[in-house]
Length: 249
Image (cartoon, rainbow, N blue to C red):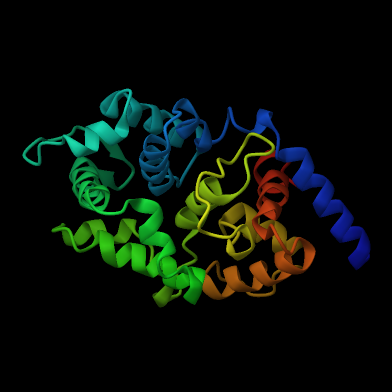
């Protein structure tokens, strides 16, 4: 496959998978149950945070979160009793971790909100924006175990789940999949969520040379995607993920 043929193939696959049919079997289906900006932001962050493992399992746990948070996750957060215990487990993410996230989010929304936390340092690079979000979250008292649920690009984590969340919030909703509700971050700065599927397909196609799924590899993949789709590089996520997880390419 020539370079030109590869580009055409990837663009076609990205268009194929970025459709409404993608939503039903993907964790993004959970925030699609809500209409208000803050509700989408909050449930979206929590679902993205637990998004590792089988997609069916993630969606099942996401629906448990919806049951807990009710019709308005934002109202639930803002009126949360910090002494309340929550019965929730997804792999290593426990009810105690969830209570920490809720308390941290309450503090954030008592201020300028979640979008501002990410965007106030975004001009310094998306890794700085993610790192700032992590630092703000960790200002809330927490168990040491909870820190592992907020990835840190400064120690070379690929930050797959946070990058996926940012794709959901920032990319245009023109195709009805992502939300496009954050206007202060630019889609051109978004990284592709680098997981086992996107990484393996990128290596099979000769896009990614490094063997580790880390921030350096995420940056390398971002540079390729930016050359292919300068204004919307994370659109390539649909092609790579779809080829790997859906078509078993």
